[in-house]
Amino acid sequence: MSETTLKEIAAQIKRAKNVAIFSHVRPDGDALGSAFALFYALKELGIQSTVYNESETPANLFFALKSEKMEKEVGARHDLFIAVDSADEQRLGVLADAFCQAKRKKITTINLDHHVSNPRFADYNRVVECSANCMNVYRLVLELGVKLTPKIANLLLMGLLTDSGNFSHDDVTAETLEIASALVAAGADVCSLNYHLFKKQSKARAALYAETMSKIRYMHGDRFALIVIPSERLERYGADKSDTEGFVDFPLNVETVEVCASLMEMKKGQYKISLRSKTYADVNKIAAVYGGGGHVRAAGCMLFGELEEIIDKLSYTVSQYLE
Image 1 (tube, rainbow, N blue to C red):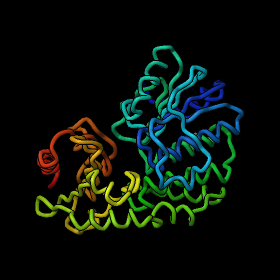
Image 2 (cartoon, helix red, strand yellow):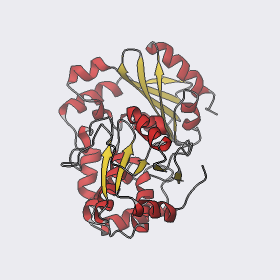
Image 3 (tube, rainbow, N blue to C red):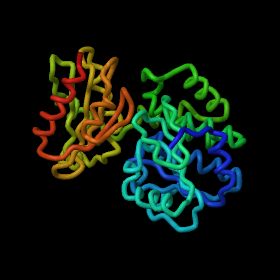
Image 4 (tube, rainbow, N blue to C red):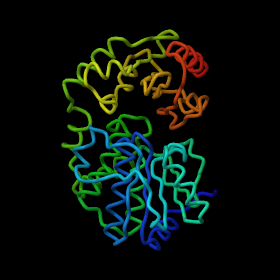
């Protein structure tokens, strides 16, 4: 499908009466910020909408999403389906079937995303690479003629802060900061967001973090570092998977490291791989080897098998992208 303009997408939204909004499984701040900012923008226009996700709201984002609810079963009342911050249909998890069925039923679908690996899977596709998908939603909200409320601004800044690594990633541009400035001017609470997203943590997370970082493994002349987060360790500390948000970024601070990976055990024989790079390695290509994707500096995939075999495979693949 060809790339579409914000004006075309806004026109489709304004024709709708009841919208289904989807974001990727195990949603982060950008996914939920995108989804609920759009939800509230549509509410300002008098358009009904529902946010869908197969996952629960991560514990670290409860502070920003106190009353907002995500549904798990898609109703038949919707006349427009929108996927936000989803690199492909499969990232919608079990709800991917509902999205695909909508297309077969000739219900209009929209894909609003920022991942370089996005295959343009909807009728209307707006995929613009940028620091966070909330930047694309911000532009859409303005195109819709909706005034930024403090709630919408706060949700958008949450996504922008989380996906940009608090403005530390190399895809942060002058426009990133200009949008952040506009969101703060509209009422977003940058101080509260920074505390809750990057500083506040439970004793369980602190203990989990300390043990995990004490066991960093280095390979390829210390240019590749990885951490493993077994289910047993989460259970031992009474921690949740959402408590591991940001863990993958720490090994990248080691001066010799170009690529780092977090291997989180989802269930026996299945690991969620999160990849980050510092200056030149394209981790989107590394993830794509295993059916994943994302961005040049941040990507992910799933790997199956015994842990040490997975580490060996991943290590070899990473070595192909290290200068």
